Image 1: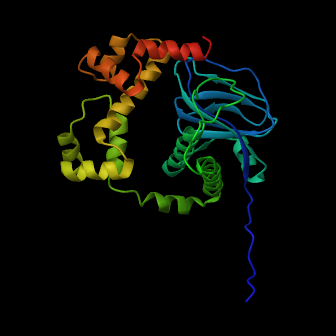
Image 2: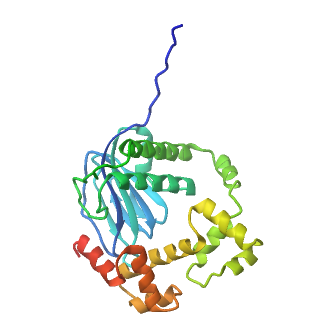
Image 3: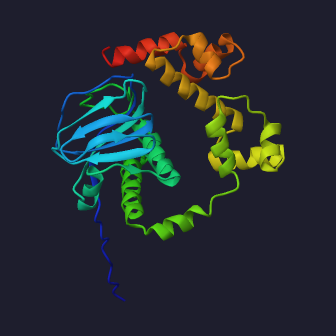
Length: 291
């Protein structure tokens, strides 16, 4: 029997990758106008940046994304007050469906944020650091990266972009319906995100959300892949990095603002998470940005 094999319809194909960056900018950092013959995805993980491009001029804030078109001149300037964290991915793709994302920023859902994180994780198994050096024109690949990892970057990035296009086309009613299916742990996560600078005890969280420690800890780790304490410490270290780059508070003041019992514990935790002391971290960031 002869089978009639079907070809795939592929309206969106990523053909090549130019670079992949995770920047921890200082406040007031800015770039000059630049253009290149590939698309550039810019996502604000934390803080805000001001964008000046041919098709959009304005501000991108937390969890917002824009995709510059090939040969589109663009630049960014960081806020005078806030030091942002920014993901930038340069890639070759001719899909017309991406054009609307150059005209206005879009806020990513939690699902899309996770998909973008998976792109970054896969890329970091293939490409060698540093990932925060501006104007890197030739990122080097690691030797002996996992089987298929290079191809997985392409597949994960295509999946993310396809999902991005679909989410923009999804009717509002459908989006609201999907939002009602969140697990019971989502409000806990939201509360921690808003109150992590305070002293958060498991007993208090259990009381507030009507559960017990075993259920709370197990559900949180299943949903977010980490313990509650590690998540809180991660938020504190991320905020500490931002405050250090803004250069307005002393290390002691940052430690107090983030609710640490002592500056010594803060410095130990910071070094455990980043491999550097707060002073060493700030010196490294300024050096890479040529400040």
